[in-house]
Image (cartoon, rainbow, N blue to C red; front, top):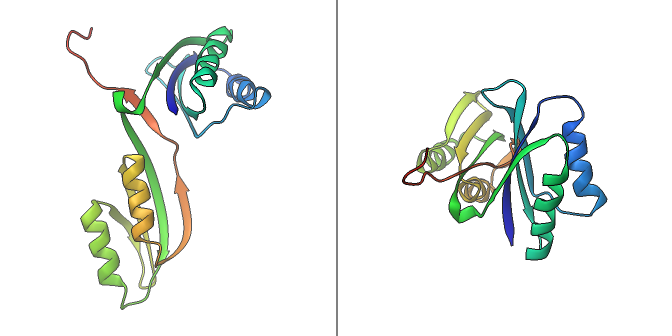
Length: 162
């Protein structure tokens, strides 16, 4: 089972270390972790995706709420959220592969952001499943470099939301 934790923390040095240390000390798994500032420069938003038993996931939430630097913790499942990841891929290709590579990009709505006669850099911002689909479709190509973000998540909009 997976759970997403949206954690607002004080934006100061050492907070990421404290939060990740909590996971390490208790042997909790982190599938993905992203951190960024919010509109308020004194607050950072962490999106943590973790997997484990229901009991473990409940313990993670309780432990996060005990941290002094933590302002707010929201949890939700994948079905309750909009999820996005970004990937950059550098692919080496031959002239005979160029058309197929471009067709895959067009099909998945991935962008070619740089190219030479032998290499392309491709980017895609999409759901984790679609990122995996791109990687699967490109496995026959020579991927020379990958840079990938963790999952960003936000609860879906609801009626009557303030």
